[in-house]
Image (cartoon, rainbow, N blue to C red):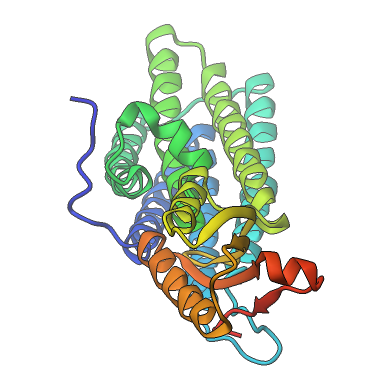
Length: 323
């Protein structure tokens, strides 16, 4: 069975907090092991744990900041603040973990050193696999929201829950790095080639660089102004077109203004039998139905045209209620 149940339902706060606790635990354990073993792999794991912890902290700050209420300066609220903090987190991971880990791994591959206490190194990496697997299972469940596990990449690209996507990548980094470390040290122990300690650190750095770049690229659309998902846009059009008074949907524009916040601007062409009062009642009804269909719809602007208004080169435009 390739489907992950939507229940239990994991909130964004739980996903982010779980990643934070896992990163903190891994950092402490890896730091002690790095001192005792002298392994480049464990050092790369420690470096990754430190930056992932900082990234998780940025994420927590961003989630809290994005929930601040709107004011006269930010009339649509502070939802996009999350994108800023998330971008900082991605840069920290790339600059402070990915690149240094790869450079350290290359240097240790060229000038290898013997690793002390390999059983401890394996124990620490196994612990990291367990903790990151648990955190990854939680972020994956929220990311998929009941979809099949085979649709994970599609869900990652289309899902607007930025905080969940970041937590998912942090957990995936931790898990893939730990697994790479185990494989590298296993080859090191079996074959006796001490260069594989450095090779494992370089692989960890490479994985971190790739995933951090994936995160930065995925954030770009939200920072610029990403539209709602095709599914949500289809639901909005279905609501508008379901009313007999609406002859045609002339235009529909949407944009995310933060987690769980979509601005909708649409233009509709109505029959000519409605007076101003009926048009206002219709707009109220359309707004309520859109919000029921798409709960993330927070700001809705509906522009209305009728044959009579077109003749007068005029249209009714009512700004969002949340202004």
